[in-house]
Length: 380
Image (cartoon, rainbow, N blue to C red; front, side, top):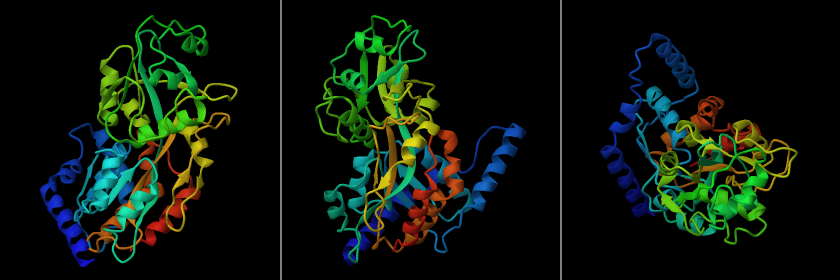
């Protein structure tokens, strides 16, 4: 057990030294010399700093995983780095699957994943969570999966589960297909071929989208929910940023990204017909309705959530996601444990959750965040 812990410490230390400059540069702030903007930024930074209690024993942190939470991590690491100069956080957005793999190899202090750990992942974590510990899911970043498109002349588009599944499975190939037209009366749809983009990497965003298909496609999507894309045809791109970039550059295209990437890239997002009285727009407020109805299905300090992808509640956006931070319940690296708990305590705080709301994320309901705070306090 001692060799496992020392190996984990060595991996973290080497990586942190190699990447030590990343957060320092990010924390230096903007080059914008506008005084009003600077004052506003300073005020916001002061508010964030007040919510941060730095670790008594600070240490550099390495983390990896979900790209869906990448923009949230950027906000958090800048605020945290400004308040706690003795801690550098480097987060590598390699996708949920790769992040969990790196955690179970002892390469990172925590991982981000857009789907709860599988039993095999938990079993593998026991090799690096010393003293009988194992990996647990801590909900931290909530959001929604936005169906983004780039179609000339179409500023508003409505889709539903069966139609969207058929598009991504290659069964619907033209934008003026009768199934799409039926959902969009009065909209002029072009006789243009549809180009679909999906994730090339193992992705929690793919898992959440295909979970929605499994609940709502009426058999149009035959594969089980999976982090590995199983649709027919289409083109692939790495990460949410890669998909967003391809949609922006390709006329007649459609793909899926976390809402913050749609907003940053000024991409059009489809509304979803769920069976409610009207189609539901992809907004944080509408996603919050679905998230508020989620239930904890994990045991002990594991807080894996069950999400209702098939919701028909009024104004409830169905394609939601929760990114979990994965850590050991006990047996975390003692060299980084204090900093790990300090950083996670900030991210789950009211200030931390509100800080990412402007980036297209959804603050976690207090019923969930209260449980996460308690679980972080129990990390050992």
